[in-house]
Image (cartoon, rainbow, N blue to C red):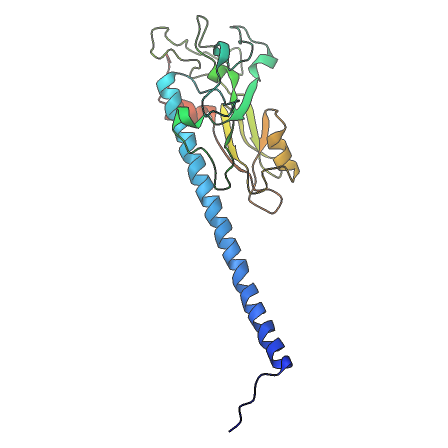
Amino acid sequence: MKQRGFSLLELALVIAVLGLLLGAAINPMRHFLRQQWIEREQAQLATARDLLLAYAVRQGRLPCPDRDGDGREDNGNGSCGETAINSSPSDAQRQRIVAGRLPWLDVGAAARNAHGERYHYAVTLHYADTASFDDPTEFPRSSGLACPKASASLLPQPSFTLCSLGAIDIRAAEGSWRVRDAPFVLWSRGADSGARSSGESENADGDRVFETRPWNTQFDDQVSWLSSAQLAWQGGLRPGY
């Protein structure tokens, strides 16, 4: 019996069906891979956040950012290379932050995210400056707040106290605030490594306001932080510290 081959029309139909099946499989796979990346980034950022907390407990301050790319904090003059904050700071001094990359070698964190991008890090300056004769400087929001002074005999001598407030504000996409007065923020850029939306631009503009929102095609930054209260509580700060 003579066997009949496929016609061009039949081959075209087979290819079309295979294309539909492949397309149906690709989208779930993309979603799975994207979710894997997000979960990995969130886990690595959470670990880095905990390591920054441990650093603050051991050193009495948070590290300065890495500005020259060597993985170490850049702490020239004991104030992250900035002008030191005095014991009677102005409002502008209270709100000063320093931004750069995470000093991963100093804190023991991962150096890069899944896309090979270094982690970004911004810190309130008075949380990261080296303790001096007039530290720890207190930054209560109300001048009438009773805030015990830390003992100068504490080792390591702390650069911040139980009443200290950070200068970093983080808001959600709809404009509501997620946290105010945070000491530091960590964030990871996504595959684009750039700013494609107003939210990503907010994280890259160098001011003290940052944004977090669920992943979408225009926003793939992953953002992590500790509030001033969390840093004090998890770091074991108490009255007299």
